[in-house]
Length: 451
Image (tube, rainbow, N blue to C red):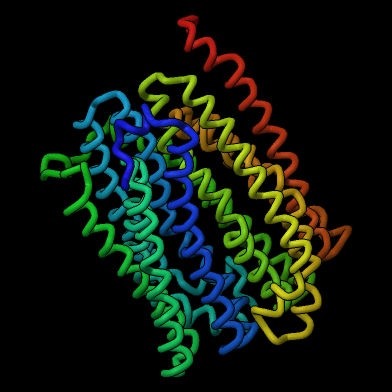
């Protein structure tokens, strides 16, 4: 049974977190399994160069479509706090502005992508033999970006309403379509990279259709024409919080550029393909922690808006506890099964031999990452855009990018892999400091009427 918005402020936190986090985790699992299987099929049926091409292209399209995610998360924070404060009209206006902002900005990115495709691919690391399959993969994906952006935005709004199961279904549907169409287009029709891209593009459109159906027939947010009018204060509030998420994705895109160039320079096409496997495993293996973080956001945002600060503190503590337990289990499994994991993706003996070391080092600090993820999410849910931006950018922007630029000069390709756990530790220390200060001072002071 779906959670109503009122229950976000009244139901037992443990039960509520499970109700929100489990569907979010399942949705992320299906999305990551989709990407994982897509990469496996591409690697097995087309070749290891195809994995490298996908590794180059996907950060570009995710950067473009992440506008939708950013507007969804930022607007979702505004929307959750409006619902928590009993202001449904503001929630409706917020949602209407989210739709228009997402479609407009994503369409602009598509036009830029069409005019500057070669330059973008080269910038993101499409060197040597990677360039041709990357171009073939890029164009069908590019056209589907507005649909993916609207899906990402809509999914966060669905979750902000407390309808986590519908958000889960929205992520499951494209996974099934993508895998089925991969088999049809790559294996049966032998369409190669174009077929892989076409399958992905169509799957994004199916997600868009489901999200549209939800808001027409199931949502509590019934939009009217008057809600589709830009209101500057709302746009400003959405933009300030959305900038946090989009900045993170922008930094991820910059990181992808630096990583792909470093990997190619120090290890050639094979190292780019190895990171393609590692990055897919990062999304796949960490799905429970990401699910807990997604489940945490609407609960924290709603209760912060309703001034139920003790419930906010309890939600933070439980989310970190559950996330840490899950992350530790994942780390142990990666340590044990690193080599069999690599063999699933490719038959190339060099990649199978070198991937396990990369996997183990990249995941080395995963048991502590829940602190960083939940901490940054809290400040975003509470509408504290500056702190949220600082903490969200800390891992990739402040630590990982400099480390990837510096360490390979002394340690070669190993310097790339060791940079990940060092960045995790440093960003967790920074986030832990701010979060502890917030929980022991500001939240308690507000509760007692001091602030």
